[in-house]
Image 1 (cartoon, one colour):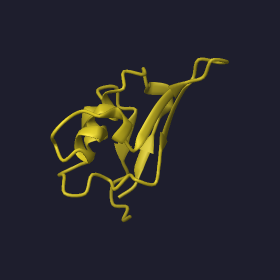
Image 2 (cartoon, rainbow, N blue to C red):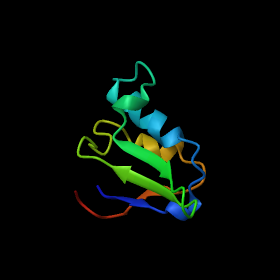
Image 3 (cartoon, rainbow, N blue to C red):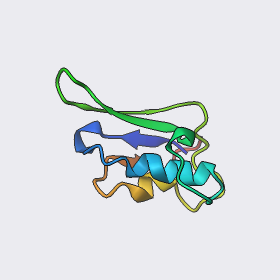
Image 4 (cartoon, helix red, strand yellow):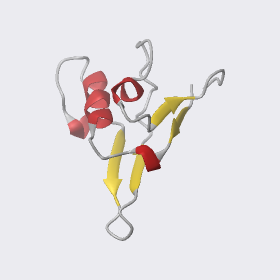
Length: 84
């Protein structure tokens, strides 16, 4: 599974980071430091950046990635029909 990112739609709400941390905590707690993605805003042009690290497992065991489900602004999504 491959995720797509549209940082132009991101508002910086950090719901995706919290959802990711919830997955990595085994659905026990929200721990942003355990998140596989980071959202940041450029101080120069105020653009948003969403970056994934190597710990992203595409939410293995979930019906779909929690970060995608948490993003109400459609800044994250899954490429349909693309294998990992």
